[in-house]
Length: 335
Image (cartoon, rainbow, N blue to C red):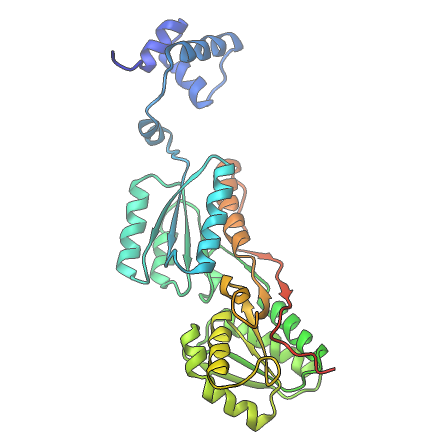
């Protein structure tokens, strides 16, 4: 027996096909009596509309595309979890794909997602190529860009106040009696790195302390480890008592360097990070750091897209969420 059609529903309800369509899509007013008849007919026939065909007609798929650099990266996993769980609350599903830093693959993924009628896209990356942002801007669908390093002035994003967060950590270290604090960041002109540096330098200046700052060629634990000897030379030469790393991965790499070279943390040197990635609380000693609300980044981003789609609510260029200090075991109280 063939499946019932919209024509069968209209016939049983004694109304026109257009009336059935209006009831299903809630597109135009229908009298309460006609609505009741249509809903009764749908229930009796167990009518299930072809959702793909319906989405093509209505241009509504209830799908959000998520293009992520690598789902295995812990903070990106948290963002995707926030996107998925909050999207589901609004009856939206996600179409997810990783591009592993391959620009051409990312372009193919974005084009593929638009063929699947996604209503919006969230790009989750660390160093997104401006071509991708331009490509997304060329489509009418709303999109958000969750990125740790890219200058977000030309796109919609969610993050924290990096200047304030960096100031909070620097002030905490000073309160613990540290006067010679070394700030270590990635060697680049990335906006977020510059904002963290600005926060550190503002507090150091306010307290009439000397600024100590070096740059390294990356943001992974590998660079934190490989630059360990260089960092330790600065520690000894300048009498540094605390190292503030712009990224948790760098801090964790340096902790490993210290362990392998008989340097004790926090007895010989205090260490602080930024991000609060999953491994920050797993390493021993556990890392004191600034917590970025990665789950909330994703949750707020998808909510803003859905509100824009459903309620035509304008999206702010940048939404600022609160950060917090997470005090663990790597900072010594010199007082």
